[in-house]
Amino acid sequence: MRHGRPTDQELRQIFHRELERVITGGGPRSCTGLDNDTARALWAIASAGPADRAALAPAAYRAFAGQLDGSNAARWRAGLERWFEERQQRRDEPG
Image (cartoon, rainbow, N blue to C red; front, side, top):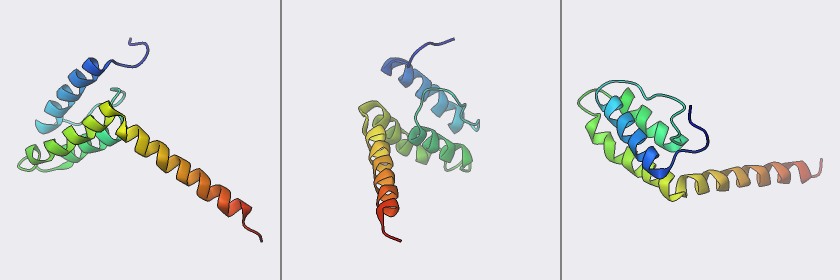
């Protein structure tokens, strides 16, 4: 059992195993440590027809790069902050 977050090297190994899995027709596993953007990209590959799977790999690599550099998390946090701000504005509106 793993404790804590996987290292970047462990994430790279996990990503490559999952990418190979979905390109060859399997489904991505859950609880891998990969973020939602990366998991969605892997699911897109798994959902595609066999002839289209390899063409979707670059999108998965981009999503995974966003996980490693933190841009996926930053985008998620910004969206969450916008959601809270909009909710607060609606609550503060009169009537």
